[in-house]
Length: 116
Image 1 (tube, rainbow, N blue to C red):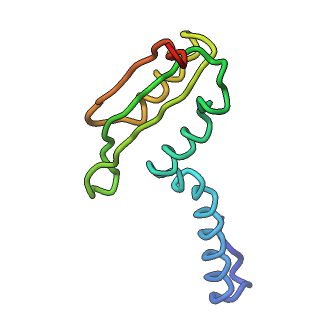
Image 2: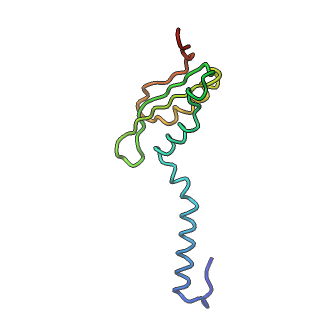
Image 3: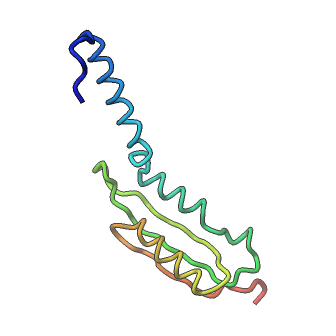
């Protein structure tokens, strides 16, 4: 879109800068989804065992994930409890997506019963 020649150049530059700033804000949420943020969000959405004592399945995924900024890797460790083996496996398959290097643990198992 060309601005009218009746608009002074400094005003054209200011409008162009404002539009570029708005464009940058539009992509900010995607850029903000860094690996540590994704890990924290995933863990926050995972049903924890303490809050769900009746859930009979425990899922564990852990490993290393390489960072996109080239500074090495981050540890990934998520644990959750689920009402069924199927629910646990769906979660586990999503959790594996957080690990893009060394996968250390990847399991869904019946939850141990206390006192046995």
